[in-house]
Structure formats: structure tokens, C-alpha cells
Amino acid sequence: MSAHPHLTEEQIQGLADGTLRGPEGMAAREHADACAECSAEQSMYGALVQRLTTLQDPTLPADFTAGVLQAVEHREHALTQRRHTLLAAIPAALVGVFAILGWALSAAPTAHLDGFLEMWTVGRHVVSAAAPVLEAARLPLGLGAFVFAAAILCILARALRLRPGTVPAHASP
Image 1 (cartoon, rainbow, N blue to C red):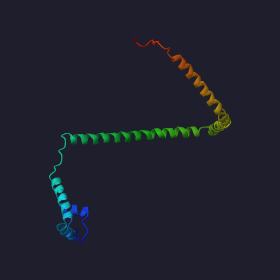
Image 2: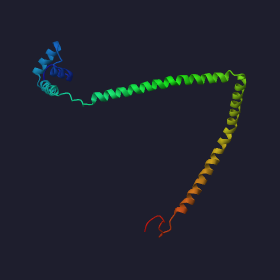
Image 3: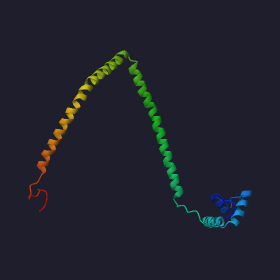
Image 4: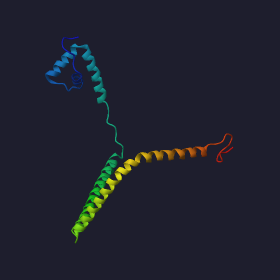
């Protein structure tokens, strides 16, 4: 082991692929020459770099460009259709706003508002009166539903039970 600490993996990789230059590269090269462990790692990375440089890019399929262009065309068509849908929705929304404003500004706008407020008040009173009744009836209703379901299940179980030695009508002998 030398007096200097070992090289980092980044430094060894830089030495192997030639990207570590300057004074740092010179110092790392001197250390790798003197240190057997760092030299072994550098030669391993050097072999890896050598093998990677021999790799070739894969060939593209013949219809690759046509497929990409078709996908781009499909995407553009979808965006155009979305834009047209939005442009068609704007006049529809304006017609709706115009109809609501026409209703609100009709001859008797207060009659509409009074009817709405009256309906709102009646609904509030019905809900406030029904809430305690429904809350109080919850337990008896739940118990009644349980007893009813248990009775139905018992009746069905007795009706579907087969006597020993009998064959169901749909089964073949």
C-alpha cells in the first residue's frame, strides 16, 4: 500500500477513458503506476472501455420513420380536435349564460328569487325535522333488517337442503 490514499472510482474511470487530464490526471497516472490495486482496477475499466467502443448502434427498423411520423400526425390530429371541441364549447357556454341572464332579468326577477328562497327554506326545515327521526330509528331498523335477513336465510337453507340418498333433478345418474 502506498503512502497516498487510493484513487476514487471516478478518477480510475477517467484514467481508463482518457477524460482525466491536467495535473490531477498526471498525479493519478503516477499513483496507478505505483499502486498494484489501482492499476488492476484501471486495467479492468480500460478493458471495459475497449469493449464498449467496439459496440455498434442497433439498426432501426425500416418503418421506424413512418411510425414516428404517423404518431406525430395522430397527436396533432388529437390536439386539433381538442382545440375544435373547446372552440365549440365557448359559444355553447355563452348561450347558456345569455339564457340564465335572460331568465334573471325577466319581468319578475324577484318572483324567481323568492321561489328559490322559499324552496330552500322548506328543504332546510324538512331535513332538520327528519334528521332526529332517522337517527332514532337507525337501531330498530338495523335490528329488524338483521332478523328479517336471518329468517330468509334459514328458510332458503331448509328449502335447498337435500335429503340423504336423493339426487337433484338437474344431475345425471
